Amino acid sequence: MSELKLQFESATHFGPGETLRGIASWKLNQPAAEIDLRLFWYTEGKGTQDVTIVHSTTLEHPQQTQSYPFQFELPPSPYSFSGKLISLIWAVELVVRPSKESTRQTFTMSPTAEEIELHTAMNK
Image 1 (cartoon, one colour):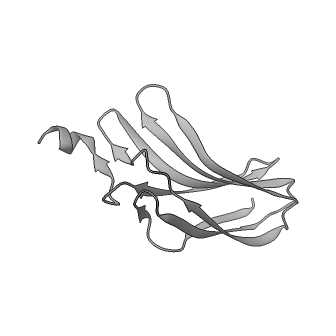
Image 2: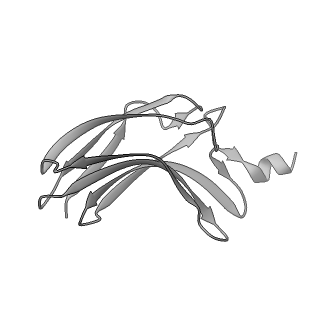
């Protein structure tokens, strides 16, 4: 199995419009055609899962061992939240093709840079 890593330059809590910087690195067992680096959010919980890719970069014919610095400007919304039925989670993902090996690093994005807890907000 290949070794894939995502590391953020600073914390894992951000506000809207901030710049998320980091380094993607990999050691592949076999050559890859492409590597995708994606900024996206997804929902977890009851009901249908939603996934929205906000930004994607494709690296064609990557080296088998490589580090790649990245940065994404975060959009104004949606905010990270957690509720009884559903949660919204932000992440950066590294996907090797054609093998589909991947790794993901999650982070929080909101005006307070903290996850919004809906069940707490609803009880106030």
